[in-house]
Image 1 (cartoon, rainbow, N blue to C red):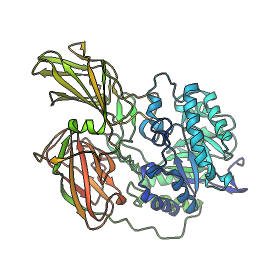
Image 2 (cartoon, helix red, strand yellow; image 1 turned 135 degrees about the horizontal axis):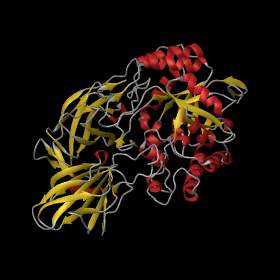
Image 3 (cartoon, rainbow, N blue to C red; image 1 turned 90 degrees about the vertical axis):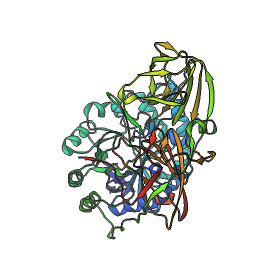
Image 4 (cartoon, rainbow, N blue to C red; image 1 turned 60 degrees about the horizontal axis):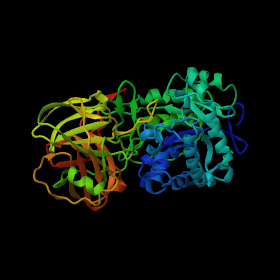
Length: 576
């Protein structure tokens, strides 16, 4: 590094990067998205690494499929691009738990993101495994990684210089000779708390460029200036609007930033999708779960389409760097197929023992498995009563003798529900849904399931069973012809459809309320009639010419047994 910029192989090098998360993109589309980054004029890809995805259980290390990080880095290098690596251990990213694994966050004795020895032991085990894999990709070893981030926006969370020092020294000890940097919001207190002696400070912001860089320079008097997250869009929560940022406004602010000579990473260049149950949540005055789409109103849309924002930013980048003199690709083809009948069904209560495991306890026990959990007990007496869930996360559907009795939602601060038991010892079933672990702020230790006593008229219930229902493999389910078109959930519905050719598509579920969807075994993610998102992105590699299978888990109820594949997305009502 020089006093005013980066050096690469001894020559001045301005980083013009873009964030793109391999774990949010189908592996069959990685090369396409990387090439479109190159065509924009980017010279590097900003790469987060989600600890919880690679290490879902302690001692496990998963690099398969969508988690094949070495293959992703190989593709970036083959395109002639560099890598800005952001390995965490905390990444935020609107990702489940901010990337921290549930087996760690569920331990109430651990002080997360701190110099707590228990936490650091887990982090060191993770980094030991990760850096063994990444060592060949470091620039000093001939690879594409030119810079490595220490933690992530720590100044917004805590004040623990020893923790940051441990992480920085650990990266050096594991062979990282490339520049280290921290990233914090352009706020004096955050930049102060989030910095580490001897490590370059960078900032995250989306506007007020001069003011943000002045704040950064107060804490980084010399060395390169870099906006490590230039927010060119935003993310959405269920029940809120779809956020966009005016493309001209975003491109103009990018131009102001580049005119100062600073380096930059677009957050996001391409957002992708929170496939399956991987989306996170915010916790302010209320719990706010993030939607499935991570389109982010980025220059490259969720389905990889070049947008007006992409074209405007490309013109700006061309003023300050080299943009390939090549035509931009035509939009990818899409496929439409309406009226797909889901004519087979299996009730979730019947499927749960096939998919999960059951334990017996005296009092309710929380879970760290995510997804869905079924709890069962008995209501002692017949007649009207008040059921109270003192603490739970995140959404609880209540059933008495198998019949729906109501729903409680964490985001609405709901805890009590009037019920009427038709008989003594009526079976009480609670279906508790994990809607995503908090990914930002002090609420990262976000346990799921039933977290406290369940009472009826103030008397705690005892004698519980708990069945965790993982949703990563549905192959063992056995379906039967559905008795009716409408679905009385919670139930899985299955159907088949035939395509002449595979292409991108968007799954629409009008008449369905809330649940998850899979096509050919691939988890598309959550849907919810509450919006704003109305369609789920179906990547072309998920589909195939010929027969395809679709499974929908409807948690509430549907008025139909059909779904549609559409040629265009619908991400909801827009707010700028």
